[in-house]
Structure formats: C-alpha cells, structure tokens
Image (cartoon, rainbow, N blue to C red; front, top):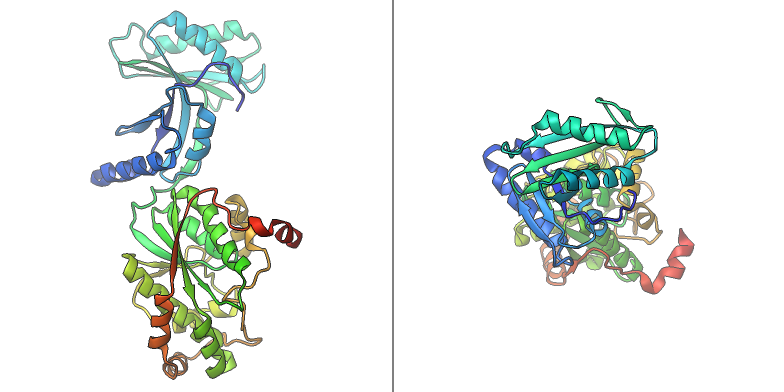
Length: 411
C-alpha cells in the first residue's frame, strides 16, 4: 500500500462467514470483538465499535499500518478497509477523494469506478448522483484514467452515514474463518515437525481455542527441541492472542516401553500412552477434543490400522485437520504461516527417538493392548501428569535466542 499524507480515521472490518450464523451471530461478533480488543491491547487510543454488519475501529490518531498488520491474523475477519471520515461538505469530500485516489491509484492509466452506499437518505445527493459527481471529478483530475464498472483496478467506496461521509479505496483480505474460541476448546498434540503446527492453525481457523501438549524426554531430547516447540507456538499465538503450552515429561514411559515392548510395537504403544495422557490433560483443562497433525499414509504410525490401534485408548474425538493433505500442501501452508523453517531444524523429539527401523504398519489391536497392559501404565502416567509445566506464550515471544548462531547453521 502506498503512503498517503493524510491519516486514516478508522478501519471498517467485515465479518464474512459470521453473516451466516443466524441467532448465534451476536455471540460470534462478541467473541471476535474480544479477540480484536485483546490483539490490539498495545494501541490504547483505539476505540472499537462492533455493529451487526461490520466492526468500526476508530484510530483516533493511531497509524493504520501497524493495526492492519495485526488484523491480518485475526480469524473471523473476511476483509477490512482503512477509511477516512469527513464532514458532509462536498468541497472537503472532493479534495480528499482526489488525494486518496492519487495516493492509491496503481498507475496513471489504471481503471476505476465509484461505489456509493447511502444510509442517510436525508443527504442531498442520492447514490447515483454521488457516483456521477465523484466520477466526473476523478476523470477531470486524472485524464489518463479509465472508467470500468466490472473488475476495475481501483474502487472509490463512499459511505454516506448520519455522522459523516466515509471514503476508502482498499479492501484487504482478512484471515477468514471463525473467531478463535467460538467453537470451543481443545488440546493439540504438538511435535516439533511440520504437520502439527499446520493442524493447529487450521483448528484455530475454525474457531477452536487450542492448548498445546508437548511431550519431552530429557536427556534424550534437548532443551533446543523443547524451545523449538515453544517458538512454534509463538508463531501461532498471533491468531489467538496467546496460547497455553503444556510440557509433559515422557522419559520414564519411553524407557519402559523400549525395555519391555517388542520392537515392531514400540511406536504403537508409545503413541497410545501419548494419546491417553493428552486426553487426561484435555479433561483437566475443560477441552472437548484432541487435535493432531496425522496425515493418512505419511509414516508407519499413520496408517488406518495404526490409527485404530492408537485411538483405542479414548472415546474423545480425535481430529486431524491435515489428514487428507499431501506433504507438499502441508509444506506450502507451513511456509505461509512461517513455521516451516523452525519445523525443519533437526532437533530430535519424542516422536523420533527410539524409533524402530521396522515399525508395524498394521499393528494388531489386541497385541497392542496386551503389551501396554503389561506395563505399570497408571503409575507412570500419574507421575507424568504430576510433572507437567504450563507456560502462556504470546506473539513475538522467543525461546531460541541463546543458540541462534548454532541453529542458523543447521538451516
């Protein structure tokens, strides 16, 4: 967006999918307003006014650009427009319209149109008269500009309201989806890989308030692996305002599984324990479901037979947002949300240590149950739950600063 010398006075936010929510619309708008207010807490001069059809964020002298950068990552926003509020004085409207078009016109020979909406029907000019008045003004001022009604390069939007006239020329696409928290709460099993952060992003896009559950096994997994998972959470935090990160100590369980379970079933039994622990944490935290980053057929533990043998430990819905996506599709989305470069840092996590060379791709459910039952699972899980640590992670939090030189060399 080009710089303009005048200040925008407000940002008009349009809800998009929220318009389909009928009687629940008010609740969705209230949740979105809360999320926007939380995300913009560092801009104290703003005033936020949600209406039925859109939200008005009055800037009160705050620059628009940094506010818009945050709005880009708030789910529930279809699009938004920075706007200028003017008095109902056509001389002022003319001067401002010329300046705004000059500042935002893509090229001297671009096409344009004027689109007027008039909610104040007492204003002297109706919508057609406003369109013609401002259209003639712009073509007279910019002789090389072209009028085009369908798909113009620039649209000057004019809103005539009771409190003034609003001008805007840009409609910026938002993150879409539903406001985080509007679809309930869940936990996400976050590894250090590419897939689970993408699954978390997609869960939040559908309005789910997620908490991260991360298993770590010192000394087999390093502090860097733990910090990488925390920083991946920080990459997703702007979409939710803040995300709780729950560390679960898993060393004892992995050692016992390694010592007593046949090699082919190591992964199956280990993941059964992980899922059961995640389910108990979900219940403690008031969650309704478990999300993970599994994709059918991607690795040995993600065949349908393996999923069946692992998911046997819970009746809680286990949701897999990337289950049918190709790896290339997942990587493209990871790059979009800026988690990819972190995810490929080669720090071993719980999912990779003790990984057998030939895991069962079609494990037998009864055998998996028998091998798990032979271990003192209840006592081990109780100790793991007693040792969990919770950290609230905010946008821009960093956890790998101490090793940036070393980690950069790994990329």
